[in-house]
Image (cartoon, rainbow, N blue to C red; front, top):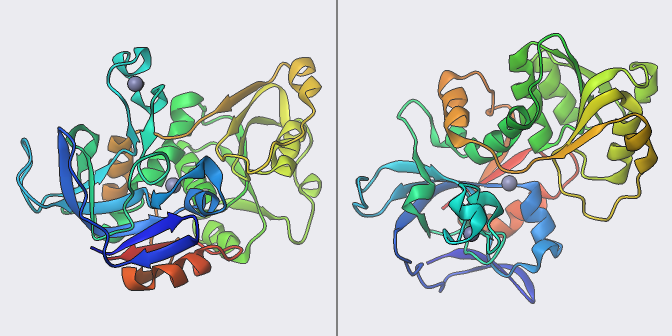
Length: 323
Ligand SMILES: [Zn+2]
Ligand SMILES: [Zn+2]
């Protein structure tokens, strides 16, 4: 089969990849559509030292009847594969398993291929009302929803979101659902156009500094989706004393930050990663989240290398691969 592999000599599409070998309780799937995420770009730059087939955002269909599922059923899947033995797995936190594997990120072949596999219990059915082009956003939308699992945000609160890349735009749409006072700090024209179309207030950082529009120490919650030290530094300046900073992106470097501010201002700093699929699928089915505007381009899998170059461009939104 075809697969986009990352190996010692870089990223390349191969045509002779063996079809995935199933482990006990695995389902074999034919990939219908897959999304390139910022994490994939980081993995190519060496994050996690991963080698193998990339890709963790997908919608696929089952190849054969599997457990209670029928062949042809469209599915999306949670990306963490726990060992099911350790203390964390046994308490239902497989996403933090000590021996965690992750689809296309840690020691597990991913979705940029004709066929893929995952444990059956990782799968969620996709209803007919959700197109492939929307369903492929389930995983990142679930990650955005994890904000609300971590911090109970009230409609009366002021929330500032820093960084409006692909994940940031999904976080903005999730936060908008709450009705809270929401301001997004963004730099890229495409992201600003999306926010404007959705009626979300934004500060264009390519034109003005955030200080011209937001008072320091004024936000109840700051969500940092930048993945850089400047974003975290701005979050420290914008959050009010006893407020919460929520970190949504991994940092490529080790950011230098003024941790004294966290102590003196009695801040809460919370990290969050993967999130709940069921509400993400409900939001996509209801049409409450606009992913169409966020889609930059769909490439055939044969042009996967070109698609990756495109996805790595500044300000580029979601690039998808269709086997
Ligand atoms: Zn991702
Ligand atoms: Zn485990």
